[in-house]
Length: 48
Image (cartoon, rainbow, N blue to C red):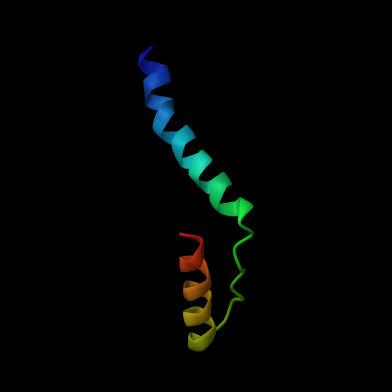
């Protein structure tokens, strides 16, 4: 049962990520664009 206990936190992280991704968070284009980063953060904060 030690193995099952060790895997539990990983599964919880996966479940959190799956829930987050169901909200279809905005994507962030690669490159230097500070205003875009601020907008991205604001949109992601709405999910939480």
